[in-house]
Every structure is written in C-alpha cells, then in structure tokens.
Length: 202
Image (cartoon, rainbow, N blue to C red; front, top):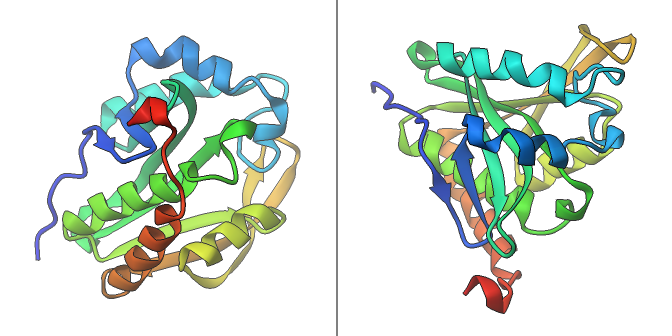
C-alpha cells in the first residue's frame, strides 16, 4: 500500500501541539535548549550547544530529510522541546522518530506520551508499516520510556555512532509495527486519560 505524506503539518493534542519547525520558533527553541544536561546522550557538541546544530536541522528539513516539530505546551504556550521524523523511507513504509528532547519541567508528565501518540498516529494513518527508535545504550531513562511506550527492543548496534561528547555510542534499536499500533495506542490513551489539562487550557 502506498504511503501518504507525513507532513509537515501541525499535530494537536490535549496537552501539546507539534508545530513544524519555522524561523519564528528560533529564539524560544534556543531558550528551551539552554540546559546542557539535555544533551548528555544526544549528538550535540557540549561546547557549541544546540545553536550550532540548529542550522543543520533547518537545512535537512528544507531537503525533506527531516520533518522536525517544535513541542508547544498548551497550558502556558511555552516551547518545551522538539522531536523529528528522520530516516524517512517511503518505499519501505519505514520512518524513525528521534532527536527528541524536552526541558526538565516537561519530563515525566503527559508531554512525551502525547508527542509519541501524535507522531505515531500520524505515521500509521499515512500507512507506514514500521516506526523505529534508537537511543544511546547508556540512556536508561530513554530505554525505559520506549519499553513503557510498548516499543519492542530489537538489539544493540555496537560502536554505532561517534558522539561529539567524545565516545563511540552503542545504539539500542526499538520498533513498533502497524499491526502492534492498536495495542500501543490503547495503552497511550489510557496513560493520557490519567492526566487532566489545567483550567487555563480548557
């Protein structure tokens, strides 16, 4: 079955909106990215910071190699992170969700599960068969979050990536297939149902 376009388009939930990256996001995004701890396991040069990585992302988005979304929290309209579709392979109905990060105050609540819900729903609605994720083998928080999501751990690629932090990273791969999405979606909907938007967002 041919796949449809993944966007860019705005994806809106109860707690967040995922907005395609545009120039007007730049200053708010850089402020959100200012905490060096955010980049412990993400390939961003710790000396140069996210500001040095952003032009590459803009260029890759312009080429269609990435579809990057800025995460806006609806309760206070704040930009609290970013996530992307990368390694988009329409011929194989395969796409990766990655380069995901959030501000410290956006972790542990509904932001990440709803971001994953919106990105997965969009991908599977477009008839993609496989959505994959990879993370640093050292990143216990990310690995636990992907397992909680319902993604299947597939294995470790040893020495897979050179990290600007100064080491060769072992990457752990996870995936969700189209046939698994109904179960994963139900789990996410149950998790999100436990959260209630603040009155200001109603």
